[in-house]
View 1 (tube, rainbow, N blue to C red):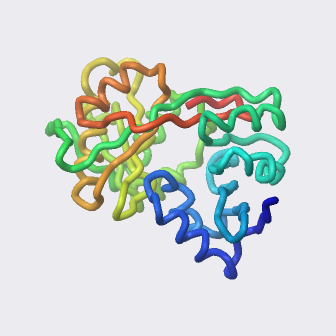
View 2 (view 1 turned 180 degrees about the vertical axis):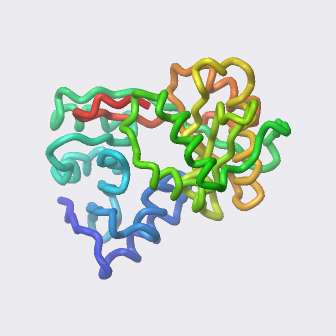
View 3 (view 1 turned 90 degrees about the vertical axis):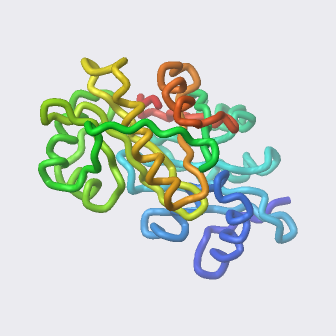
Length: 263
């Protein structure tokens, strides 16, 4: 039998000790529970005081984002805490049958989980690359991402917040931003790299390699490793990341419950 508790001040430290045992594996939960509790709701399954897993619901993204990380025999106990409505769930492939029983119309995509450490990294630099910092940079980022019609539109204030608070690097050609990559989680153990995107008309020219290399280089100045997720059938992107030194360390599932979003 499992005892499920909602995380609060009384049990948060127990959960953090569990997450600390493998920060890279639990990076999103380790970060959100500590640094953004206002937008984080977490339920933990215990068996004789041993943590068997958790489900985390994060509300600060464009759509609800869930993480289900647990032993198989705790999955059904935890998944009942998934909300009704639309969300993206990130989980291990072996937990998909439990998710499908609860959400039979969910669509799933396999993502490669890739990581690079300092000794393995190979950086590719260019004068075309610099960090985004200003409101003008934010406006160019908004223009670039407006072309990406597979994501919800964001207000300009969100892009200003990104470039003033987060490490984001862009590739500029003739004064225009054509590619970018950033990090949305920074911990001493690992920086998570994400948001890699290139103007469709500027692809296959090495721009994503330059942007991802720049943010990875900064990451490895401050952290032990850099990690990212990429859809397993996105072979051009995987090739780019491998040139920097990223190697596959596992797989995760992106499970779409009613959002029609894909990784």
